[in-house]
Length: 395
Image (cartoon, rainbow, N blue to C red; front, side):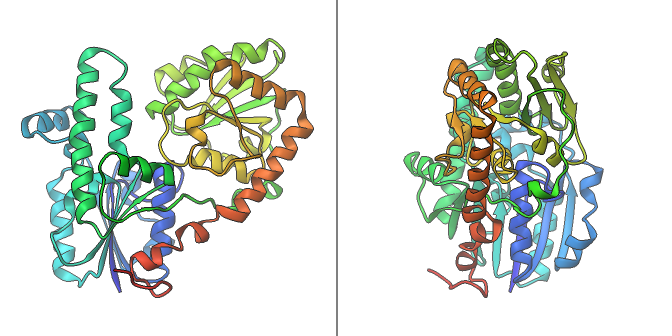
């Protein structure tokens, strides 16, 4: 069986949210079928497919993505298309897809992220569209704030992208979302067709606290991890630093808020002080997780299942999250929720006051991951959707 795997970003290394999901899906499929990868590269490093992954694939074609955002915006306005699609519209990608379809008898196509749906051929192979999140809903959320021109653009993007998402879902054999909540949101917005929730998993053997030596910490360590040029992450750490951390420092003045993740924006770097550390990229996030007294996920705008939360759970850490960051995760007894600044600070403070409670919460979180969130368990439904050897073809 031959599968074409389309990805808007090279699915390696698995070190950020979208790459983690795409990488594990790709490896799952490659273990059972001949998989042909075609993906965009954000930079020169992405153009080099890791040797082990290349050996597992039937072929790999990586297309550099060089279009400036300003050009994508102009093209979108001129053609009446969403900016999200214009940004990933490339002649080289179209040629690569057409060439592969001409040379190989493709039985199924797995398109990762809505931007890649514009490259799907009409008819022929079975199509599984992995939207991951309802991206149009994210832009609708952005439209509620900011200057008027920005709000107008966000409303336009939400409307046009939402229409495109619904069109794609109506003709795909299955449309995937990262959680039942995202799938329900899509249906509520008018999405039709076969809509399936395939949750993210976690490599529980890799994120095993028994195998990791924690970093030395001078005092209680409050940890946030993530890609730090991603708007929801930037807004989350700024809100926590400005509105939540002072409340925590009232009773725990030695607590250090540490922000770990690549490409911190100027706004994030400006938070750095004697009580706030901004590390930038690190070689391995696990020693930071192992050292954390509490992992925090104060995202106000979040879609689907947060990998940063699953990683903290797997590392047996105590976690405090916003309702949005915890949505989609079976978190009863394993995550404390902070709905506002006061509630978030109180939840963190309670865990710092009771290290035994924090440790017990962490152990339950690790047990929950082992019981439910391993990648093989989460991805098993794909076998039937794609008619793979381990699954049963469904109409």
